[in-house]
Image (tube, rainbow over all chains, first blue to last red; front, side):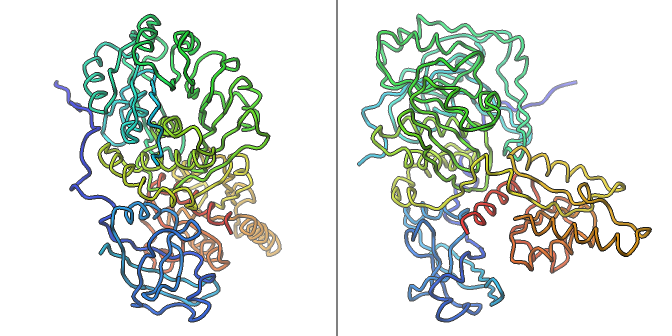
Length: 114
Length: 437
């Protein structure tokens, strides 16, 4: 009876496919929509509204805005790594994929690196 | 200005382990290697004085040199045990289930002569000791007459530590000293009264630093990531803290260390970690101001988490038990309504059923988060999820069995996940969000 096992340390394996998270698209439900300027003026943006990720952070948050720079909502904090991606020269654009003007307004977006 | 202190020369002292990740089919060098990876990523000058079993000698020298360590030196042997750490739960959803093979028969022979000689040659400004099965005081004594700042991670320390005179004591909420202090953060101050600073790492809930000179602790957020592993993340935090400039405010130092630790936790690949750390220096100001998650350890018992599930006698509730244990491990208060209020049945009177319903609703109202765990296609689980979501409260669908195919169920919860690590990440993120208001 033979035996099997790992024969080397796995520290130095490059990232799968040689890509980083910066190159991935992002699908997210935005936070704090009701507190943003866009909602105050227009309510929730309809699906297919073009959006982009604002460069840098505002009050410690990454902000999704319309193409004129009006804030629609904050990305969840688990997407903070995108701040580093922006530092590497990435920017992100996309569109609203779902919106609902309920008791707590809901806006979901899809963003792609451009 | 460089984030890290170019004038520092850091000497890391500790044991080398082999980390065997049972859940990932992966082995990595651990122990002092976690700090070494962090210091390599930070690009600071450092060396390592390590203890290891002789079969690891060549691996250690070769990998430490690859990691940019200057003249790494073996300063002691480990005999009687292979220094292999088996890790059942890499992501620390709950107890990581560390198994230190043959640990009871391990002996370490720290050669203080070799250590003292290496200190003389290398001339460190800072000593970072990752405590293990050796006497910390022997390491501190080997410094004499050389002067350096001494920082000790005490999580795995043996013996009495309360008298050690050091600049920084690092401990975490899973470490032995924290347990000895009754898991009361403020008790660490009197326990380590001879230390100038005490840094407490509170897993995904942030960190704090106590200074001898200041009454109040300085606190900082953690930065949520999709956790790949939690192994050595605390050592990475320590190394980053030591590498940062001394004049940096403690709050910034905590945040930066926490941020680098979150990058470390997000990948097993050293190359990816190193690249991310390097790039994060281009957005330093953003990192200092980023909003993250702060849920102090002692506040977590007040976070009631409703577990909506078919918690019935005829259902296998092992998965639900694991959820409860994981949440308790992180000091939250999971609530199981059927255990607390009882199980409804058709023999009850109308009044008894109304009262039971009222008790369950009162429990739902008292909870700030709901985790739905559909172990079967139980309508009660989904009704509770719907009730909670309609109140505008945060909820998570934890569906390891992939039973929630219904359109409403799969769309109602704020987060959906099928792994325990993903669940714990989501709990910290959403509770942090609720607490921010």
